[in-house]
Amino acid sequence: MPLELVTIPCLKDNYAYLLHDAASGETTLIDAPESGPIFAALKARGWHLDQILLTHHHWDHIDGVGAIVEATSATILGSAADAHRLPPLSRALVEADQVKIGTEIGYVIDVPGHTIGHIAFYFPVSGLCFTADSLMAAGCGRLLEGTPQQMFESLAKLQQLPPSTLICSGHEYTAANLAFAATIDPENSALKARIRAVTRARSGGHPTVPVTLSEELATNPFLRAQDPYIRQHLGMADATDAQVFTAIRALKDKF
Ligand code: ZN
Ligand code: FE
Image (cartoon, rainbow, N blue to C red; front, side, top):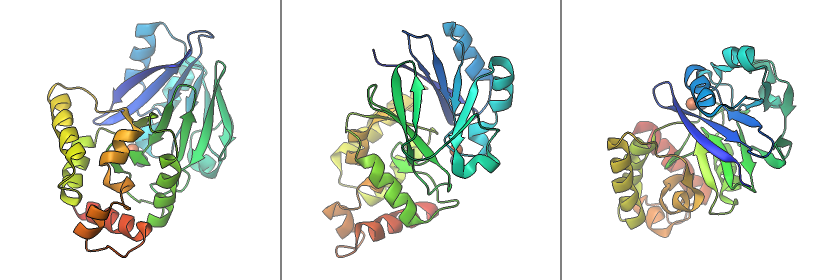
């Protein structure tokens, strides 16, 4: 049976996620922006938290860890590369390491760029990937520590996942990301349709995550550097995909 996924809005525009395995009763949290909404989500379902998976060291993804561990004694797993600036880890992870929830296995994918030690967690059986501030809904994280080339390669790995994979990212930035995307890819009808759907969702107060990888491939300009229209629109018909990506990232920083 696939894992049950709960999307939890936190802080102003962050998301945490719970994954629950009904057969074993095990529950895992991905990122802990704050403790209150996570305690409430656990309590509402009568779940006990066993494990916390951390994507990267930024405070808006780890601030709730202390209070949650104190209350639940959950284990903490995060990137070995960032062990010195994450809460004390029960286990330090490197690329291709496995994490377990019940009988389901998740795989660690290194996705540096936003930070050097940023990792994603991919659960193939349930078709879920937790990407936080690497691949984001209609965008990608700002390059606070890594290079454009690193982020380009990180996104290239995530693009290889099955298109039906649900991308669970770390923030509600979708509307702003789409407004930028429309300046890069103005004739894209899938993008126009997504802007309408996201506008509806936000006016109803609904999250715009998770979203399928196939929708990202069709509308996220950071996954579309190879698109002939975008390349022509940017005057970069003969550039490499990495150069086009770098130009799009630079334009987004100024948007
Ligand atoms: Zn971050
Ligand atoms: Fe963040």
